[in-house]
Length: 240
Ligand code: F6R
Image (tube, rainbow, N blue to C red):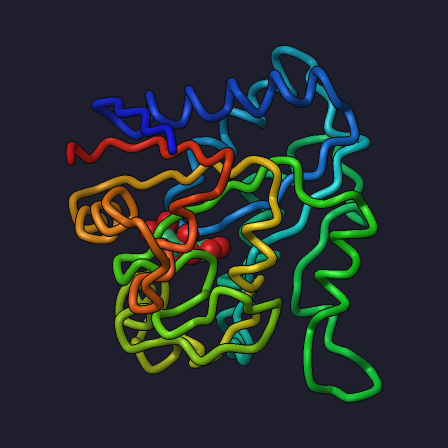
């Protein structure tokens, strides 16, 4: 596990975006796993700038987002993670929208039960080359909430009170935060060839410390699943 500390989230995001751009230069059809939320916003702005100013092309890139809310009110459609990605990245670069994937669209049609078609599609592209992750205050990665199993695949999950509270800042009322989401599983995430976890702000310190000090998986802190991934880079403004 490599940990890179910078004083500001701007410096962290610059460092992370440079890695991604370098990888795109090496492999134009790279498969990226993408997170939403406040954490990757500057990173995505940097990528847009790379496209506009330095002519980095995203036209052959494939993306898989980590998660999506289920049960958003019509009035809150702008809180969907598809909307977030379109407005923070996809609409401003030359990516093909058909190459961008969200787990919510992969409910198994026969059983109407699971979303494992998403994992199968990721595999069919040769797996995720670089997975960007944020970190929940409660240690979640994607929406793998505490209690998630290490072998979990893409699936429907109930959001915890802590996550609903944390995400209520984007909604008029806490009541309007969806209670469920579809999330890539922990096993799905662990298959990524490279993982870049961004963690900003003191409120993430406890979760980050759990990961840093982990020497096994603790399902109460899902982020600890990353402890022995063979290519995990943590970029943070939190001094541990
Ligand atoms: C979002 C996601 C979540 C967030 C986490 C942190 O796609 O996967 O795990 O990364 O909830 O959210 P922010 O960045 O808003 O603090």
